[in-house]
Image 1 (cartoon, rainbow, N blue to C red):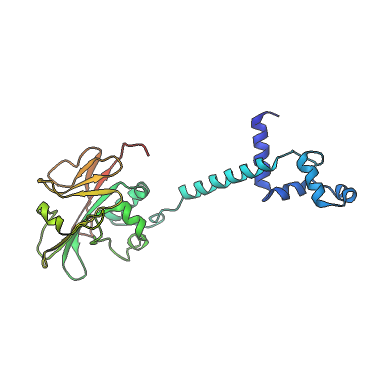
Image 2 (image 1 turned 135 degrees about the horizontal axis):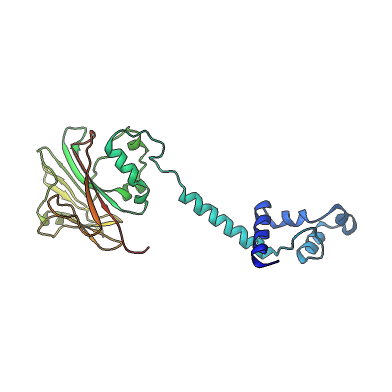
Length: 260
């Protein structure tokens, strides 16, 4: 028997039996037990190849192949994990855009800019690391339409204000008010004049640029420029979304060229 046929035979045995002992028992006949009068001895003879009605498989080969098949099964199940947006009847362009990008953002890619009003009537805007939010919260409520995705003080950059503004540029020094460990967050309250800054696992916030706010993608260290009047940067695109859910929505997509 050539190696390929032998490997196929082992695979068939491994998938058929849960344990190596189950395989050994399948090779033992009632006649064997009658004469040997010892199930353990009969198993040993089969394992050594002296008895049995089929292929001889070593214990280490069985267990190694069993482990490999289980690893492959778990990897396939993880890869085919159902997306939160799957099967949803999405009507708004913004939710459709999120759904299209959901799979890619399991490993970090898009930045979402949202401008709208919160439940208190205050105008809020901010930049959201889509991949990071996917990991820390359940998007089922957003795709089902039960809640709206809005910026939080824990996002990369968020503002709350009462006056009408679009994508803003604040003085670079305003982000230096709070520095905690390796995180820089940005939250600005125009009433209280409080600013907070926050980086994410995927993006580093750069606030000392005289031209405005920048984000650095940590995997390939490329710069994403969110200024609507500038080019977004290498391997990046800026897509305004026509939506009924928000005053304004823009999605920045970055394609990392770095091998992972």
